Every structure is written in C-alpha cells, then in structure tokens.
Length: 315
Image (cartoon, rainbow, N blue to C red):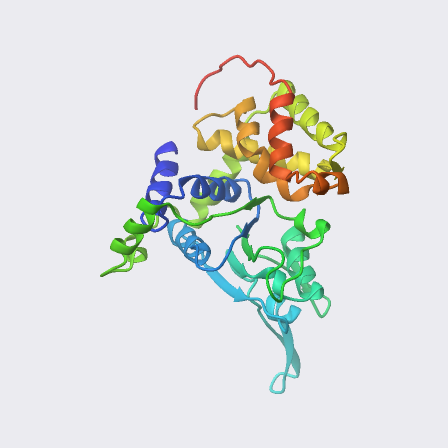
C-alpha cells in the first residue's frame, strides 16, 4: 500500500507544483475521513487541487460557488411535485457526490453555511422529512477568502470545528512559478494525471487507517497538548474534546502515510497546528501582543515533553 500512497503524491505533483506539504496534508485528511478548509486568495490552485485529487482517487466531484443568494436547497437538494405520478420527486443538490469543492464558503448566508456544515457532520441530509445518506466516501474541500475581503463574513467557531484541517496554499516560489508557466504553455497537465485508486480501494485504505495503533503515552501526550491550550493566558477557548479526537484521528492517518501501523509523537507534532489552529479563540491580550494561533501552538509543542517511544515493526 505504501507504493500506492507514493504514487498518489507523484500524480498530484504533476498538477500542483511546489506544494508537496499541502498535497500530503490533504491526503492525510482524506484518509482520516475529514474535511479541509483552504484559506487563500483566488488563483492559487485550490480548484485544481480538488479536481486533481478527485481524478487520482477515482472520485466523483462537484463544485459549488457560494454567493450571497445561494440557498440551502442548492446544496442539499429539493423536492418538486410530479404531475404525472402525483408524488414529490427529489432533485439532488451539489452535496450528492464524493468530493465537493465549496468555493468561497464565507460569502454566503449563515443559513446556507449551516446546511452544508450539518451535512458534513452527520453525513446525511433531510429534505421534506426524508433522510438520505451521503455518498461514501464524502469529503468537502471548502475555500474561504481571508477575513476582511469584500463581501465576506467569518465562519462561527462552532462551524469551523467541523473541519479537520485548515490549510493555506500560498503563492508558489520563483522556481515553481516558472515551472507552472512552462508546463501549461501547450498542454493541460490534468490530462496527464492517471487514476491510482478506485472508490472500493480508498474505502479499504481508510479502514486500515482506523486500525493504526495508538498507545497510552500518545493519548496522554495529546491530552497534555490540549490542556496546555486551555490553560494558556493568550487563548480564550482552547482545543475541545472533539479537537483532541481530531488530532488522534489525523495522527493515525499521518502514521499510515509514513508507512507505520502505530503512532509516534512526531506524527502528532506534524499535524497539530493545522488541525488545531482554527479551533482556538484568542484572548484580547493575544491580539494586543500580536500573537497568532500558529505561533502559540508552536510554543506549546516546544513546551510539552514528548513521550519516549520504543520502535516496533514497520508495516
């Protein structure tokens, strides 16, 4: 399976240049069956990233562009009256897919955001009293413009908590920018991307990830990190129990990516900031001293001692 993981990343790099860390983090989130929030300016490759992952993993994908007048029915679907049969017929919304790119989620109303985020959490939608399960697997890659952009509103903390990770792609470096321009001069690199997995294969892999072993020292390490966020004077609201569970789940996927069937402290440290950064609410004191969530989490990682682990067999 390790060869497949490496092949997935190799295929993704044909399209997404110079962003190996983002590719790996999104793949970890997919294997952990979580959703990803990409916070970035337009034109940095977020849509391309989602399309490439859908193709490489053999997933059906859809994209919805959020605007101020996007309705919940655009996402979850609606029922219309069929005059021939005299019954209500369900018309699926954009959410009935494997991978949904929710573009500029912070441009729409709170009601529409809630419809999407509720479906993300429960993995089902209810329309006119009928509950329908979503596709398996179901992954949301949502994008939002940085806070303060015209026409945007910040997502509430309770809704942000539904995302497993928050990532930023950022601008490419100089060498990557030149390579991107050369690569797209004559052909579309997406045409060269080959599928690596089918849906049954991906579901089997996610099942293997859930079986990755987590020892008691790792559970205690995650708990220590979470408690440090709750007792930090710069943090008003720290990592919740749901956040700690998310760290544990993501660390298992991270270990799997690195070819192990057990979690080590380095796995937790690798994913801690991108899993917990958006779950914190900073205090007024933090804003006064120009502290950031990522900077505080980095300090916490340095302050909390890692448990000593004995190596066991590699998968």
